[in-house]
Image 1 (cartoon, rainbow, N blue to C red):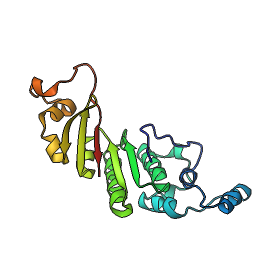
Image 2: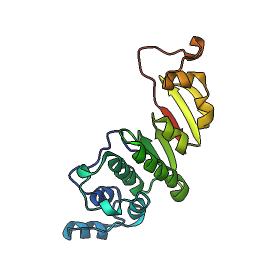
Image 3: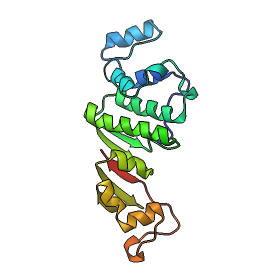
Image 4: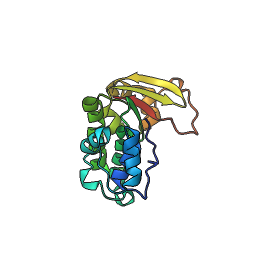
Length: 189
């Protein structure tokens, strides 16, 4: 399952409804019942676990368009988790989030791996997020791998420091064009 940087949430639906979209009914009876008896459906299984893990209980009946940016990111990630995947790819899960929202997202991302046993692949530019949630990091620059290892190891590589932190490194180590921005670091928990 994959999340998107632009979230792809159903803005005219509630948080509950966004989670239910991902949690297909387990059988035909549940599907037919949902069509006949419209109304507030209860979350079950992976959708309920996602709501609990992400702390979305207080927001379940709120429209997603009214939520803060960081909470919308949590809803998008929770929706991916509600489909009960083995692997989830998070594309910029903290884009536009403030420090408090990023810290909350980092806690949840770690919990996805630890409590739900999911493999988590993150595409992220915020190095504080990478440092706090990732065990292994692969850094790409224009599609070329320039470093692999722990967050501490890759942040010590001159080419990474130059590409992402603007710190000058030896010209022969970079081998990249000066005009285009670097690719995202790719990491996994």
